[in-house]
Structure formats: structure tokens, C-alpha cells
Image (cartoon, rainbow, N blue to C red; front, top):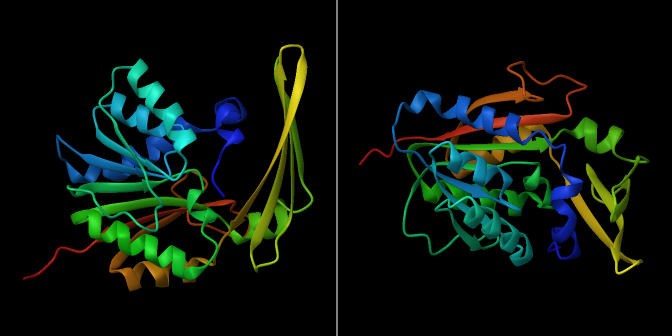
Amino acid sequence: MIYQGFSGVYDRLMAHAPYDQWVEWIEKSLAAMKKEHIRILDLACGTGEISVRLAEKGYDVTGVDISGDMLAQAQQKAAGRQLPIRFFQQDMRDLSGHDQEFDAVVICCDSLNYLKDEKDVLDTFKNVFSLLKDDGLLLFDVHSVYKIDDVFPGSTYADQDEDVSVIWQSYEGESVHSVIHDLTFFVENGGVYDRFDETHEQRTFETEEYTRLLKTAGFSVQQITADFSDRKPDTDTERHFYTAKKAKTIV
């Protein structure tokens, strides 16, 4: 699934998303590095909201997304703010071609949940590992099993502004711990409304499985927290935040 029509209305749909909380979590996680210059790869950067916020705080940011339409929006934002962010169109499962290593890689906004099987997740972790400096960090968040299995299915979300309306319905997917999101948009166009529909599928895994995959890729898991807090996840946590480190190479 590549975001097409979605990209044009994504920022309005996500206007109330807690981007500042994501950035705060990232900065808090990176504070222990005590470096003046930190190079960050923002994977699945979408329209660049987090990339831009990080760059404005002085980080050296590179953004990657699978969608050219999303990246076009991101490039406009960066250019409008005169921020030197590099953007690349790539699948997170294949990150070949980068000529530099990073201090941190971030995968925010439950983007990792768009990978539908363990192999895809493991391939992504291995790609990230290869791009990190020694002691570099991988930071990502995912929906919990509770949210995928018990919160999303049967839910409906609707919103509208002057020229865009959206209806978002979610139901259980075929794979274990998966959900289907059906989105219908009505976009005003010269006095009439154009309709377009998109279907997004997300899947999550148990904490033990993400931990196993991280360790298989070579990471050590530093911390798993809940819902933008410092507390450990419990049965009604909706979003898990992972911090994993690339161990220093011993030659």
C-alpha cells in the first residue's frame, strides 16, 4: 500500500496528532549520548512533520518514505523553513545506498505496524542495524495487541472541515493481531465533492516477539515504555515505545 490520495489530506487528518510528544520522547532518549552533532534517520517519515521538528532543534536529519507523494509534501515543508533535510524514497525493508551511518534511527507513528509478517520486521531491523553507528539507537513505537484486537475493531471515526470530510472505519483483519482501516474521503473541488477510498492494513506482535526479532538483528533492548510515559506497559496500554541499542563492535 502506497499512500496516494491520502497524502493530500494527511496533515489535516493528523492535525491533532501528538508530534511534539514524539519529538520529546526522541530527545529524552538521545540525551544520554551527550553529543553536539547527532545524525538521525527518520524512517517512514511521511509528510515530514517529525523530520522538520527535529531539524529545527538542530539535529542532522535524513527522511525516508515509500511514498513519493508523501515525500513531495515533506520536501515542501523543509524548503519552506529552509531546513537542509535530505529525503529519499525507499522501502524500510531495503535501505541500500546510504553513504553515512546514523546515531539514531526513529520509526514513529506506528509505521512499523504496516509490516505484515515477522520476516519484514526482521529485515527492517537488520537494515537499521547496518546503518547505525556503534552504540546507536533504534527508537520506534507500535500499537499494542490490546489496541489492535480490542480497541480498533468496530470503531468509526468521522471528521470534516471546510473542504475535506473523512470517515474511518476499522475491523478485524485476517492475520492474528491485525486490523483493516477503510477510509473514505470527500474533497471539495470547484463546488462538487470528489470521493476517494483507501484501505490500510496494520499488524502488531507481542512484546516478546519484537524483543526476539530485535535480538536476532543484533540489538540489545534498553527499554519498553507505555503511551508517551516512563511506565512499563500493562494490559490496557495502547502504544508501546521501544529503545534498542546497537552494541559496540569488538574487533
